[in-house]
Image 1 (cartoon, rainbow, N blue to C red):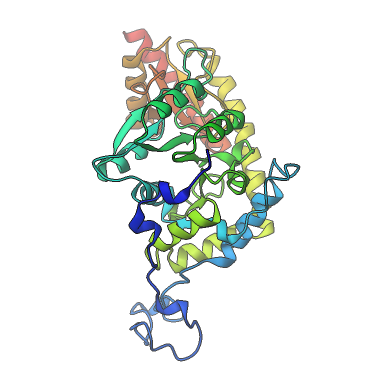
Image 2: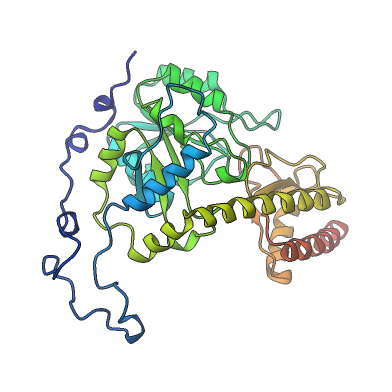
Amino acid sequence: MVFDLEKIVRPKIYNLEPYRCARDDFTEGILLDANENPHGPTQNELIKSNLHRYPDPHQLEFKTAMTKYRNKTSSYSNDPAVKPLTADNLCLGVGSDESIDAIIRACCVPGKEKILVLPPTYSMYSVCANINDIEVVQCPLVVSDNSFQMNVEGVLTILENDPLIKLVFATSPGNPTGAKIKTSLIEQVLQNWQNGLVIVDEAYIDFCGGSTAPLVTKYPNLVTLQTLSKSFGLAGIRLGMTYASKDLAKILNAMKAPYNISSLASEYALKAVQDHNLTKMEDTARSINEEKMRLLKALTALEYVDDQYVGGLDANFILLRINGGDNTLAKKLYYQLATQSGVVVRFRGNELGCTGCLRITVGTHDENTQLINNFKETLYKLANNN
């Protein structure tokens, strides 16, 4: 079976002519073509900025630098079928959430077609599907052995029996599981299913490496999502990246609003992918991983915390089970830490395979030390009062 993008993307979107904006034609000179305010921003402190002008609609400089980095760090450089990524393989969005919504709108007919998700997983896939009147089908990750890996046989069986499923969303590393899905498992689905797209959401990939982004040049049915929110420390600028085949990236770029990435977001994003800042990102990720192990060792040594962490250690957080899966105690601990100690973690006990679990982001050394102390004190008080 040969993958045919034209059969995956909705016809009107496949043939969509993108909006052509003023900055597609000229970017310099006396610009009287876009009905901008020639006097500049009304705030005096911004008068010397260029914020009265629309931003770059294409972000080619950033895309080129970003793909250069993913090529440099690729795990597939010895695979002749994997070609270098270029700016033409990228579409940018306002965080990964805009990218998720765009892919669903591009491929799924409302009220008819479906997506497949692998719980426990990021809930925005289902939120975006519901907004677009798309049914959500589930195939749980393997939780019995604590691996939280993809059940490939189950996924392929569901896909074979339901031709209305157009998209498969896999979070790797997982959220809330922290477990990176083995690339070999993802490739098995890519090789055996050509009737839609497999979207791998890699928000946390720089904490473990092995991105699937370079593989979009090998598998036209693969889409990889990334963000600047985590390892790059730029959650506030809301910039997400979609890596796809050049044909699909062209369609997604045609769909997006012409100026969806602001000038400020563009400025900080471009700084982030300069060589010295990429080195700092890598150093910071290593530092977080070191603190992660310190935090894990200290918390799993506590009474009422299970020795075995839940899921994996491939992201910038850990998932711990309280008292053998005691949801009541875990929820009380979460709430009292937040309200009495000012230390905020996340209760995840209602997720599949995560009963009694708290997800804890790795903070700075001092923040982690405070967490450890407050966690122990609060947990012991609650456990001994029950």
